[in-house]
Amino acid sequence: VFLKGFSEAIGVAVVLVATYLGLNVVVVAVGLWQVATEPHVVADWTQALTAEHGNPFMMIAIALVVFPKLALGLSGFETGVAVMPHVHGDPDDTGARPAGRIRGTKKLLTTAAVIMSVFLICSSFVTTLLIPADEFKAGGEANGRALAYLAHEHLGSAFGTVYDVSTILILWFAGSSAMAGLLNLMPRYLPRYGMAPHWARALRPMVIVFTLVAFLVTWLFDADVDAQGGAYATGVLVLITSAAVAVTIAAKRAGERGWTIGFGIISAVFVYTTAVNVVERPDGVKIGACFIAGIMALSLLSRLARVFELRVTHVELDDMAQRFVRDTANRTIRFIANEPDRRDKAEYRDKVEQIREDNDIPPGDDVLFVEVTVLDPSEFESGLKVRGEVLHDRYRVLTLESSTVPNALAALLLHVRDETGQRPHIYFEWTEGNPMANFLRFFLFGQGEVAPVTREVIRAAEPDRARRPHVHAG
Image 1 (cartoon, rainbow, N blue to C red):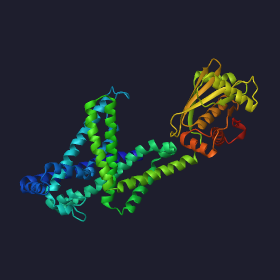
Image 2 (cartoon, one colour; image 1 turned 180 degrees about the vertical axis):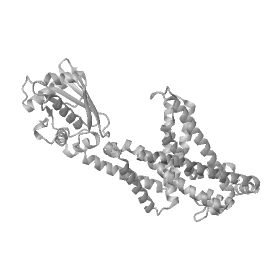
Image 3 (cartoon, rainbow, N blue to C red; image 1 turned 60 degrees about the horizontal axis):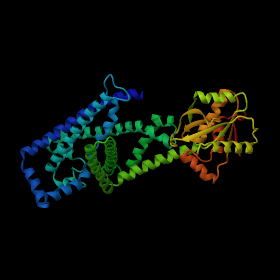
Image 4 (tube, rainbow, N blue to C red; image 1 turned 90 degrees about the horizontal axis):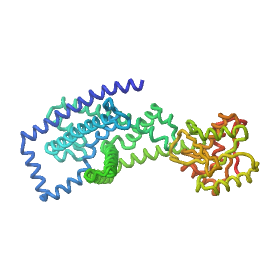
Protein backbone atom coordinates (compact mmCIF):
# COMPACT_ATOMS: atom_id res chain seq x y z
CA VAL A 1 0.00 0.00 0.00
CA PHE A 2 2.83 2.38 0.85
CA LEU A 3 4.63 1.72 -2.45
CA LYS A 4 1.39 2.11 -4.43
CA GLY A 5 0.72 5.41 -2.67
CA PHE A 6 4.31 6.44 -3.27
CA SER A 7 4.02 5.78 -7.02
CA GLU A 8 0.81 7.81 -7.17
CA ALA A 9 2.52 10.58 -5.22
CA ILE A 10 5.25 10.69 -7.87
CA GLY A 11 2.61 11.38 -10.53
CA VAL A 12 1.10 14.15 -8.43
CA ALA A 13 4.57 15.53 -7.78
CA VAL A 14 5.34 15.72 -11.50
CA VAL A 15 2.16 17.73 -12.09
CA LEU A 16 2.90 20.02 -9.12
CA VAL A 17 6.49 20.62 -10.13
CA ALA A 18 5.58 21.24 -13.77
CA THR A 19 2.82 23.68 -12.76
CA TYR A 20 5.01 25.52 -10.27
CA LEU A 21 7.92 25.64 -12.73
CA GLY A 22 5.65 27.05 -15.44
CA LEU A 23 4.24 29.71 -13.14
CA ASN A 24 7.73 30.74 -12.10
CA VAL A 25 8.82 30.95 -15.73
CA VAL A 26 5.90 33.29 -16.39
CA VAL A 27 6.62 35.49 -13.35
CA VAL A 28 10.37 35.74 -14.03
CA ALA A 29 9.81 36.29 -17.76
CA VAL A 30 7.32 39.09 -17.07
CA GLY A 31 9.80 40.58 -14.59
CA LEU A 32 12.60 40.52 -17.18
CA TRP A 33 10.25 42.08 -19.73
CA GLN A 34 9.40 44.84 -17.27
CA VAL A 35 13.10 45.51 -16.71
CA ALA A 36 13.73 45.57 -20.47
CA THR A 37 10.84 47.94 -21.20
CA GLU A 38 11.53 50.19 -18.24
CA PRO A 39 15.29 50.77 -18.37
CA HIS A 40 15.08 53.46 -15.75
CA VAL A 41 14.85 50.77 -13.03
CA VAL A 42 18.35 49.59 -13.93
CA ALA A 43 19.60 53.16 -13.92
CA ASP A 44 17.95 53.84 -10.57
CA TRP A 45 19.51 50.70 -9.13
CA THR A 46 23.04 51.45 -10.36
CA GLN A 47 22.72 55.05 -9.22
CA ALA A 48 21.68 53.90 -5.74
CA LEU A 49 24.65 51.53 -5.64
CA THR A 50 27.23 54.09 -6.68
CA ALA A 51 25.74 56.73 -4.41
CA GLU A 52 25.99 54.51 -1.35
CA HIS A 53 29.07 52.46 -2.29
CA GLY A 54 31.26 54.19 -4.86
CA ASN A 55 34.10 51.70 -4.55
CA PRO A 56 33.51 48.53 -6.67
CA PHE A 57 35.61 46.45 -4.26
CA MET A 58 33.40 47.60 -1.40
CA MET A 59 30.36 46.48 -3.40
CA ILE A 60 31.92 43.04 -3.84
CA ALA A 61 32.78 42.82 -0.14
CA ILE A 62 29.22 43.74 0.86
CA ALA A 63 27.84 41.29 -1.70
CA LEU A 64 29.91 38.51 -0.09
CA VAL A 65 28.53 39.47 3.31
CA VAL A 66 24.97 39.40 1.99
CA PHE A 67 25.50 36.22 -0.04
CA PRO A 68 24.51 33.85 2.81
CA LYS A 69 20.99 35.26 2.67
CA LEU A 70 20.66 33.55 -0.71
CA ALA A 71 21.27 30.19 0.95
CA LEU A 72 17.57 29.35 1.06
CA GLY A 73 17.53 29.77 -2.71
CA LEU A 74 19.92 26.80 -2.91
CA SER A 75 17.29 24.50 -1.42
CA GLY A 76 16.43 21.86 -3.96
CA PHE A 77 19.98 21.06 -5.03
CA GLU A 78 20.15 18.47 -2.25
CA THR A 79 17.05 16.62 -3.53
CA GLY A 80 19.13 15.43 -6.48
CA VAL A 81 20.70 12.95 -4.06
CA ALA A 82 17.29 11.34 -3.48
CA VAL A 83 16.70 11.06 -7.25
CA MET A 84 20.11 9.60 -8.12
CA PRO A 85 19.21 5.95 -7.23
CA HIS A 86 16.40 6.09 -9.84
CA VAL A 87 18.78 6.84 -12.73
CA HIS A 88 19.02 3.94 -15.19
CA GLY A 89 22.39 2.82 -16.48
CA ASP A 90 23.73 0.92 -19.46
CA PRO A 91 22.94 -2.79 -19.92
CA ASP A 92 26.57 -3.67 -19.20
CA ASP A 93 26.74 -1.66 -15.96
CA THR A 94 27.98 -3.50 -12.88
CA GLY A 95 27.95 -2.66 -9.21
CA ALA A 96 31.69 -1.98 -9.32
CA ARG A 97 31.58 0.08 -12.55
CA PRO A 98 28.17 1.74 -13.08
CA ALA A 99 29.47 3.94 -15.92
CA GLY A 100 26.04 4.51 -17.47
CA ARG A 101 24.43 5.51 -14.21
CA ILE A 102 27.27 7.90 -13.42
CA ARG A 103 26.98 9.49 -16.85
CA GLY A 104 23.20 9.81 -16.52
CA THR A 105 23.51 11.24 -13.01
CA LYS A 106 25.97 13.88 -14.24
CA LYS A 107 23.44 14.94 -16.88
CA LEU A 108 20.65 15.03 -14.29
CA LEU A 109 22.61 17.11 -11.77
CA THR A 110 24.05 19.43 -14.42
CA THR A 111 20.61 20.11 -15.91
CA ALA A 112 19.08 20.72 -12.48
CA ALA A 113 21.97 22.98 -11.45
CA VAL A 114 21.72 25.07 -14.64
CA ILE A 115 17.94 25.46 -14.35
CA MET A 116 18.04 26.35 -10.67
CA SER A 117 21.00 28.68 -11.01
CA VAL A 118 19.35 30.58 -13.85
CA PHE A 119 16.15 30.86 -11.84
CA LEU A 120 17.98 31.97 -8.71
CA ILE A 121 19.97 34.67 -10.49
CA CYS A 122 17.08 35.89 -12.64
CA SER A 123 14.59 35.96 -9.77
CA SER A 124 17.08 37.79 -7.54
CA PHE A 125 17.72 40.28 -10.35
CA VAL A 126 14.08 41.11 -11.15
CA THR A 127 12.90 41.23 -7.55
CA THR A 128 15.76 43.57 -6.60
CA LEU A 129 15.00 45.95 -9.46
CA LEU A 130 11.18 45.87 -9.39
CA ILE A 131 10.31 45.68 -5.68
CA PRO A 132 10.79 48.69 -3.37
CA ALA A 133 13.36 48.06 -0.67
CA ASP A 134 10.89 48.78 2.14
CA GLU A 135 8.67 45.90 1.00
CA PHE A 136 11.47 43.41 1.83
CA LYS A 137 11.62 44.49 5.47
CA ALA A 138 9.78 42.72 8.27
CA GLY A 139 6.07 43.28 7.79
CA GLY A 140 6.50 44.24 4.13
CA GLU A 141 4.36 42.59 1.47
CA ALA A 142 7.42 41.08 -0.24
CA ASN A 143 9.02 39.70 2.93
CA GLY A 144 9.39 35.97 2.31
CA ARG A 145 7.27 36.08 -0.87
CA ALA A 146 9.05 38.26 -3.43
CA LEU A 147 7.92 36.37 -6.55
CA ALA A 148 4.37 36.16 -5.23
CA TYR A 149 4.46 39.95 -4.82
CA LEU A 150 5.46 40.33 -8.47
CA ALA A 151 2.77 37.87 -9.56
CA HIS A 152 0.05 39.93 -7.85
CA GLU A 153 1.54 43.25 -8.88
CA HIS A 154 2.12 42.62 -12.59
CA LEU A 155 -0.19 39.72 -13.49
CA GLY A 156 -3.30 40.42 -11.44
CA SER A 157 -4.90 38.97 -8.35
CA ALA A 158 -6.31 35.89 -10.15
CA PHE A 159 -2.90 34.76 -11.39
CA GLY A 160 -1.37 35.76 -8.05
CA THR A 161 -3.86 33.57 -6.16
CA VAL A 162 -3.09 30.61 -8.43
CA TYR A 163 0.62 31.22 -7.80
CA ASP A 164 0.04 31.35 -4.02
CA VAL A 165 -1.89 28.06 -4.07
CA SER A 166 0.79 26.35 -6.18
CA THR A 167 3.46 27.64 -3.78
CA ILE A 168 1.63 26.15 -0.79
CA LEU A 169 1.21 22.81 -2.59
CA ILE A 170 4.85 22.67 -3.71
CA LEU A 171 6.03 23.44 -0.18
CA TRP A 172 3.75 20.71 1.12
CA PHE A 173 5.30 18.33 -1.38
CA ALA A 174 8.79 19.50 -0.39
CA GLY A 175 7.99 18.48 3.17
CA SER A 176 6.73 15.12 1.94
CA SER A 177 9.88 14.57 -0.13
CA ALA A 178 11.99 15.48 2.90
CA MET A 179 9.99 12.91 4.89
CA ALA A 180 10.65 10.27 2.22
CA GLY A 181 14.35 11.14 2.28
CA LEU A 182 14.49 10.80 6.06
CA LEU A 183 12.71 7.44 5.89
CA ASN A 184 15.43 6.24 3.51
CA LEU A 185 18.38 7.71 5.40
CA MET A 186 17.56 7.31 9.10
CA PRO A 187 17.36 3.47 9.19
CA ARG A 188 21.00 3.35 8.09
CA TYR A 189 22.23 5.31 11.10
CA LEU A 190 19.85 4.61 13.99
CA PRO A 191 21.13 1.04 14.58
CA ARG A 192 24.56 2.49 15.35
CA TYR A 193 22.98 4.24 18.34
CA GLY A 194 21.30 1.07 19.55
CA MET A 195 17.95 0.92 17.75
CA ALA A 196 17.14 -2.54 16.43
CA PRO A 197 17.33 -2.56 12.61
CA HIS A 198 13.80 -3.98 12.21
CA TRP A 199 12.54 -1.14 14.42
CA ALA A 200 14.36 1.46 12.33
CA ARG A 201 12.82 -0.02 9.16
CA ALA A 202 9.25 0.30 10.51
CA LEU A 203 7.88 3.10 8.34
CA ARG A 204 4.66 3.93 10.17
CA PRO A 205 6.24 4.68 13.60
CA MET A 206 8.96 6.73 11.90
CA VAL A 207 6.36 8.77 10.02
CA ILE A 208 4.51 9.43 13.28
CA VAL A 209 7.72 10.52 15.02
CA PHE A 210 8.73 12.90 12.23
CA THR A 211 5.21 14.32 12.03
CA LEU A 212 5.17 14.97 15.79
CA VAL A 213 8.58 16.65 15.50
CA ALA A 214 7.20 18.87 12.73
CA PHE A 215 4.24 19.88 14.90
CA LEU A 216 6.56 20.51 17.85
CA VAL A 217 8.85 22.75 15.79
CA THR A 218 5.86 24.65 14.39
CA TRP A 219 4.50 25.17 17.90
CA LEU A 220 7.83 26.24 19.42
CA PHE A 221 8.44 28.81 16.68
CA ASP A 222 4.80 29.88 16.37
CA ALA A 223 4.88 28.81 12.71
CA ASP A 224 7.20 31.74 12.03
CA VAL A 225 8.32 31.54 8.40
CA ASP A 226 11.59 33.41 8.96
CA ALA A 227 12.65 31.19 11.87
CA GLN A 228 11.85 27.96 10.07
CA GLY A 229 13.36 29.35 6.87
CA GLY A 230 16.59 29.94 8.76
CA ALA A 231 16.51 26.39 10.07
CA TYR A 232 15.93 24.99 6.61
CA ALA A 233 18.71 27.14 5.14
CA THR A 234 21.10 25.88 7.83
CA GLY A 235 20.27 22.27 7.01
CA VAL A 236 20.72 22.81 3.29
CA LEU A 237 24.03 24.62 3.78
CA VAL A 238 25.43 21.96 6.12
CA LEU A 239 24.52 19.28 3.59
CA ILE A 240 26.02 21.11 0.61
CA THR A 241 29.12 22.14 2.60
CA SER A 242 29.83 18.59 3.73
CA ALA A 243 29.41 17.41 0.13
CA ALA A 244 31.81 20.08 -1.14
CA VAL A 245 34.42 19.12 1.47
CA ALA A 246 34.00 15.42 0.62
CA VAL A 247 34.53 16.09 -3.10
CA THR A 248 37.61 18.18 -2.30
CA ILE A 249 39.09 15.33 -0.26
CA ALA A 250 38.27 12.84 -3.03
CA ALA A 251 39.95 15.05 -5.65
CA LYS A 252 43.05 15.39 -3.46
CA ARG A 253 43.30 11.64 -2.93
CA ALA A 254 42.97 11.14 -6.68
CA GLY A 255 45.92 13.49 -7.22
CA GLU A 256 43.89 16.01 -9.27
CA ARG A 257 45.51 19.27 -8.27
CA GLY A 258 43.35 21.60 -10.37
CA TRP A 259 40.06 20.12 -9.21
CA THR A 260 41.31 20.10 -5.63
CA ILE A 261 41.99 23.85 -5.74
CA GLY A 262 38.67 24.58 -7.43
CA PHE A 263 36.59 22.48 -5.05
CA GLY A 264 38.62 23.83 -2.14
CA ILE A 265 37.60 27.38 -3.05
CA ILE A 266 33.97 26.32 -3.35
CA SER A 267 34.17 24.55 0.02
CA ALA A 268 35.65 27.66 1.63
CA VAL A 269 32.78 29.78 0.26
CA PHE A 270 30.19 27.37 1.64
CA VAL A 271 31.95 27.07 5.00
CA TYR A 272 31.91 30.86 5.29
CA THR A 273 28.27 31.01 4.16
CA THR A 274 27.24 28.33 6.67
CA ALA A 275 29.05 30.04 9.54
CA VAL A 276 27.50 33.45 8.76
CA ASN A 277 24.05 31.90 8.38
CA VAL A 278 24.38 30.15 11.74
CA VAL A 279 25.44 33.38 13.45
CA GLU A 280 22.69 35.46 11.86
CA ARG A 281 19.95 32.82 12.16
CA PRO A 282 20.76 30.48 15.05
CA ASP A 283 17.27 28.97 15.05
CA GLY A 284 18.43 26.31 12.60
CA VAL A 285 21.16 25.12 14.93
CA LYS A 286 18.74 25.10 17.86
CA ILE A 287 16.18 23.00 15.98
CA GLY A 288 18.86 20.66 14.62
CA ALA A 289 20.53 20.30 18.03
CA CYS A 290 17.23 19.45 19.73
CA PHE A 291 16.41 16.91 17.05
CA ILE A 292 19.86 15.28 17.19
CA ALA A 293 19.91 15.27 21.00
CA GLY A 294 16.46 13.67 21.12
CA ILE A 295 17.36 10.96 18.61
CA MET A 296 20.66 10.18 20.38
CA ALA A 297 19.05 10.11 23.84
CA LEU A 298 16.29 7.73 22.74
CA SER A 299 18.74 5.56 20.84
CA LEU A 300 21.18 5.34 23.75
CA LEU A 301 18.33 4.41 26.08
CA SER A 302 17.30 1.78 23.57
CA ARG A 303 20.88 0.50 23.43
CA LEU A 304 21.06 0.35 27.22
CA ALA A 305 17.76 -1.54 27.43
CA ARG A 306 19.03 -4.17 24.96
CA VAL A 307 22.63 -4.31 26.06
CA PHE A 308 22.30 -8.01 26.95
CA GLU A 309 20.52 -9.08 23.76
CA LEU A 310 22.19 -11.62 21.49
CA ARG A 311 22.85 -9.49 18.40
CA VAL A 312 24.52 -12.02 16.11
CA THR A 313 22.52 -12.95 13.02
CA HIS A 314 24.45 -16.10 12.08
CA VAL A 315 27.65 -18.00 12.87
CA GLU A 316 29.94 -19.48 10.20
CA LEU A 317 32.93 -21.71 11.01
CA ASP A 318 35.64 -22.29 8.41
CA ASP A 319 36.97 -25.80 7.79
CA MET A 320 39.75 -25.54 10.36
CA ALA A 321 37.41 -24.21 13.07
CA GLN A 322 34.92 -26.99 12.37
CA ARG A 323 37.72 -29.54 12.68
CA PHE A 324 38.78 -28.13 16.06
CA VAL A 325 35.23 -28.37 17.41
CA ARG A 326 34.68 -31.81 15.91
CA ASP A 327 37.90 -33.18 17.45
CA THR A 328 36.82 -32.11 20.95
CA ALA A 329 33.12 -32.97 20.62
CA ASN A 330 33.54 -36.49 22.03
CA ARG A 331 34.96 -35.03 25.25
CA THR A 332 34.28 -31.95 27.36
CA ILE A 333 34.51 -28.90 25.12
CA ARG A 334 36.60 -26.24 26.83
CA PHE A 335 37.29 -22.74 25.50
CA ILE A 336 39.70 -20.18 26.95
CA ALA A 337 38.82 -16.53 26.26
CA ASN A 338 42.03 -14.71 25.44
CA GLU A 339 42.57 -11.05 24.65
CA PRO A 340 45.07 -11.09 21.76
CA ASP A 341 48.22 -9.26 22.69
CA ARG A 342 51.67 -10.30 21.51
CA ARG A 343 50.37 -13.73 20.40
CA ASP A 344 53.75 -15.26 21.11
CA LYS A 345 54.33 -18.72 22.53
CA ALA A 346 54.81 -17.47 26.11
CA GLU A 347 51.43 -15.70 26.09
CA TYR A 348 49.50 -18.89 25.29
CA ARG A 349 51.63 -21.10 27.57
CA ASP A 350 51.14 -18.80 30.58
CA LYS A 351 47.42 -18.43 29.86
CA VAL A 352 46.86 -22.19 29.75
CA GLU A 353 48.77 -22.75 32.98
CA GLN A 354 46.87 -20.00 34.79
CA ILE A 355 43.42 -21.16 33.62
CA ARG A 356 44.17 -24.81 34.50
CA GLU A 357 45.35 -23.79 37.97
CA ASP A 358 42.42 -21.42 38.65
CA ASN A 359 39.75 -23.90 37.54
CA ASP A 360 41.33 -27.31 38.35
CA ILE A 361 41.26 -28.47 34.73
CA PRO A 362 42.97 -31.87 34.35
CA PRO A 363 46.28 -31.65 32.43
CA GLY A 364 45.12 -34.07 29.75
CA ASP A 365 41.94 -32.17 28.78
CA ASP A 366 42.03 -30.31 25.47
CA VAL A 367 41.42 -26.57 25.39
CA LEU A 368 40.72 -24.16 22.51
CA PHE A 369 41.60 -20.49 22.61
CA VAL A 370 39.01 -17.97 21.48
CA GLU A 371 40.07 -14.44 20.49
CA VAL A 372 37.67 -11.66 19.49
CA THR A 373 38.73 -8.50 17.68
CA VAL A 374 36.30 -5.58 17.96
CA LEU A 375 35.80 -3.85 14.60
CA ASP A 376 33.01 -1.29 14.97
CA PRO A 377 31.30 -1.21 18.40
CA SER A 378 28.47 0.95 17.00
CA GLU A 379 27.15 -1.89 14.80
CA PHE A 380 23.93 -3.21 16.33
CA GLU A 381 24.02 -6.69 14.81
CA SER A 382 26.19 -8.60 12.39
CA GLY A 383 27.17 -12.08 11.31
CA LEU A 384 30.04 -13.96 12.92
CA LYS A 385 32.79 -15.66 10.94
CA VAL A 386 35.04 -17.98 12.94
CA ARG A 387 38.47 -18.85 11.63
CA GLY A 388 40.66 -21.61 13.06
CA GLU A 389 44.45 -21.54 13.13
CA VAL A 390 47.29 -23.37 14.84
CA LEU A 391 49.91 -21.13 16.46
CA HIS A 392 53.43 -22.19 17.42
CA ASP A 393 52.68 -25.75 16.22
CA ARG A 394 50.69 -26.40 19.37
CA TYR A 395 47.92 -23.98 20.32
CA ARG A 396 44.58 -24.13 18.50
CA VAL A 397 42.95 -20.70 18.27
CA LEU A 398 39.52 -19.61 17.05
CA THR A 399 39.60 -15.98 15.88
CA LEU A 400 36.44 -13.88 15.55
CA GLU A 401 35.62 -10.32 14.50
CA SER A 402 32.57 -8.66 16.01
CA SER A 403 31.13 -5.42 17.38
CA THR A 404 31.23 -6.72 20.99
CA VAL A 405 33.30 -9.40 22.68
CA PRO A 406 30.59 -10.87 24.99
CA ASN A 407 28.03 -11.16 22.18
CA ALA A 408 30.48 -12.94 19.93
CA LEU A 409 31.51 -15.40 22.63
CA ALA A 410 27.91 -16.10 23.64
CA ALA A 411 26.89 -16.69 20.03
CA LEU A 412 29.82 -19.06 19.48
CA LEU A 413 29.00 -21.07 22.63
CA LEU A 414 25.33 -21.43 21.71
CA HIS A 415 26.25 -22.41 18.14
CA VAL A 416 28.69 -25.07 19.33
CA ARG A 417 26.06 -26.41 21.75
CA ASP A 418 23.49 -26.70 18.96
CA GLU A 419 25.98 -28.34 16.57
CA THR A 420 27.47 -30.87 19.00
CA GLY A 421 24.66 -31.41 21.51
CA GLN A 422 27.09 -30.64 24.37
CA ARG A 423 27.15 -27.70 26.75
CA PRO A 424 30.61 -26.18 26.20
CA HIS A 425 32.65 -24.54 28.94
CA ILE A 426 34.39 -21.18 28.61
CA TYR A 427 36.99 -19.82 31.03
CA PHE A 428 37.76 -16.17 31.81
CA GLU A 429 39.98 -14.10 34.01
CA TRP A 430 38.19 -11.51 36.11
CA THR A 431 38.73 -8.08 34.58
CA GLU A 432 40.79 -5.84 36.80
CA GLY A 433 39.46 -2.37 37.69
CA ASN A 434 36.21 -0.73 38.74
CA PRO A 435 33.17 -2.82 37.64
CA MET A 436 31.17 0.26 36.63
CA ALA A 437 34.03 1.60 34.54
CA ASN A 438 34.41 -1.80 32.89
CA PHE A 439 30.69 -1.91 32.13
CA LEU A 440 30.86 1.54 30.51
CA ARG A 441 33.80 0.31 28.42
CA PHE A 442 31.66 -2.55 27.22
CA PHE A 443 28.63 -0.31 26.62
CA LEU A 444 30.59 2.21 24.55
CA PHE A 445 33.44 0.22 23.03
CA GLY A 446 32.36 -3.45 23.13
CA GLN A 447 35.08 -4.47 25.62
CA GLY A 448 35.37 -4.49 29.37
CA GLU A 449 33.44 -6.65 31.86
CA VAL A 450 33.45 -9.65 29.51
CA ALA A 451 32.78 -12.63 31.83
CA PRO A 452 29.55 -11.50 33.57
CA VAL A 453 28.18 -9.85 30.42
CA THR A 454 28.77 -13.03 28.40
CA ARG A 455 26.89 -14.96 31.03
CA GLU A 456 24.01 -12.44 30.98
CA VAL A 457 23.77 -12.57 27.18
CA ILE A 458 23.58 -16.38 27.34
CA ARG A 459 20.96 -16.22 30.13
CA ALA A 460 18.82 -13.80 28.12
CA ALA A 461 19.11 -15.92 24.96
CA GLU A 462 18.53 -19.32 26.64
CA PRO A 463 15.81 -19.36 29.35
CA ASP A 464 16.38 -23.06 30.13
CA ARG A 465 19.18 -23.15 32.67
CA ALA A 466 19.89 -26.81 31.97
CA ARG A 467 20.80 -25.98 28.35
CA ARG A 468 23.05 -23.00 28.95
CA PRO A 469 26.79 -23.23 28.23
CA HIS A 470 28.99 -23.06 31.33
CA VAL A 471 30.78 -19.78 32.10
CA HIS A 472 33.73 -19.83 34.52
CA ALA A 473 35.69 -16.88 35.88
CA GLY A 474 38.74 -17.31 38.08
